[in-house]
Image (cartoon, rainbow over all chains, first blue to last red):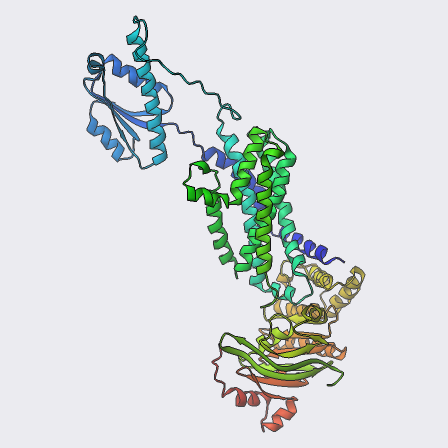
Length: 373
Length: 248
């Protein structure tokens, strides 16, 4: 009987006998893909705003109407007391406090110059940023309308207006999920590959069965292959559930590009990720160490993988780190193929880089895996 | 050297940095012999045994195991030996049958061979009703007997046992030794480390290791005579008393 076959049989028996792992394999893609895209939504709505209207004129009311009609803001307080509005910010009840000073309308008409004051609660930097940007936009367009109105009757407007008409390619409705789901799918496969593979091998070290393997004539390469192959298959399986079961059925995401490219890349990617798991297992003596090490790398991989923040806007050194992160390549490939329908020609370099990753991690792990001490 | 010697060790030494775990030991073990390896904790027994199994590379010295060189032919050695470690070494999440099939399989036995030998073994151990139970659910005594039987399942020339009866009750220990005698009768050389002095007397010859050095090597009765002792216990105390290394 072939040794590799005997080893594989044993691995599959052990994996499928472990009901916790089995449940995780099924539940993880479903739960993560159902919960995370809904929760990790960048579109910010319901920004609490407190408006202090000291002007109380038709114009100030018009502006307030514009703001509340935009749908982004939630007016938590309206009044004429700036102190009270500031208190709301201090208590974290409001993100923005907009003060319309008393002579706003008069100044605007007479001196052609009206001032507004905006206080921003920057504890939640993202919300503050987005909120002030939205508000700026609303005020600008309000301003433009005003100008058009006041210049009616003149032959030419004082300043030419440039209007921008944006068209969103590849994701016309800026559907957040089309952007997030493929990325989360990548993380999922990454976790399964690295954690499960590393823990599985280290467990044998911990309980001592690896000694028994090491005194046997099993070849190093057979032992390692028998550890990698099951998780390679499980990775493919989980990915398929995610792509067809959840992304398509729940979110209606149908890849624009070729599925063969996605699965081809996944196959190489899994080898690379399993190589990382293997490498971690050769450096850890027990499952606790393996968990800590994997967690350390996963944090970097996830935060620098371009899922939550675009790599292009990272500082140079961080972009350099991201270019050494296999996760970032797969996320990019997934997004390119799924929403853009990118072809093999566009992705050749990604394939080359991932193959190098796979070779690198596995060679390192193999060199570090010893049967003798 | 004797044609029938299956283990020939000469000046074997293992150093970890400045610490010499095994210091220049030499001995020969004959085919079918039960060779006891005694010593306090930390005396270097396990390190010596790990070198002989090819799990650890010696720093100096030479050894021929089952006719193969310990440096050059470790993979060939591995085919000819069985090993049972201190830690329980079967898979607890596999059944009795699956463990036997797995370990038979990795030593390259054919399916038919495995099936035949497995049913004989399960009958012998009285595990028929438990053959589909997970090994983890068996009592320790049964596990140890099974682990030994699995270690010699592929008919090795030598079997190495590292404190095989730790934590096992006296009756099971006797049964365990019956299995060892049976293996020895069938020509398998048994190399065993132990802390139990009654077990030492069951061995054909014993060595006493102190501080990485072999202090005595002879049959149990000769040793008792030589040290004018009533029991092997006394011989052990006499030798181990002067040990410089503190146990554990």
